[in-house]
Length: 256
Ligand code: PEP
Image (cartoon, rainbow, N blue to C red):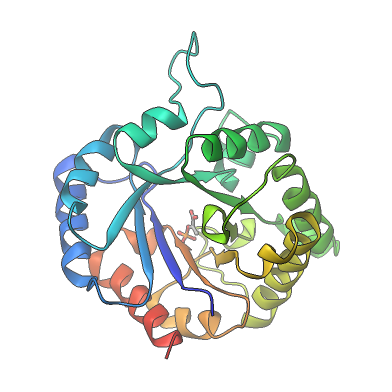
């Protein structure tokens, strides 16, 4: 069985004091013996400080983005090695807000370069994929997932399944309060897994595929009960310790 993984994407929220308080509460609530992996992804500028609070706990930190070059004249950017240097272990790549809404409008080629740079630095990419509402309405969901998986993983090889995480995040469900039904999530995850198998071989069976899109403590259990839903990438509900820990508990319960 794949070990569940719950990651919080703080986006551009909280300040340093509140972030440290939140992660302290999360560390206290996540028992080292629990059967899930847990990460929080604060803004770049708080990474080192938040990583320091997590030291000795079962919680690790990730970043919300990365740049694909290793060093040089790239004002404002941060390399994967720099992220590793301050204690990050995971990197969210290709989040829909970066693909569709923030001025950068990342394309799949850039996302692939980021995945490869992250792997080279020994960090684990959390590659986000997902269809827009109009793509779903026009029955393109599975084709979009095929394209994003294949384009995102060009030239990527793995020694172990833990070296890559995929997050299926239907764009219409992110921050909207609208959630994919368990059936919609399972269909998308199963399709994604078959693409992972086609691209990477049998290791695809062991790669964790997270669901993201308005996951909350009260809807987490039914989503996590789906055979190919291996955890969650959590936005809004990751900003409060009780709601984030509620989802972690649902993930622990799903392993029973
Ligand atoms: C996200 O931003 O990755 C996300 C899933 O957000 P939310 O949980 O708020 O929908």
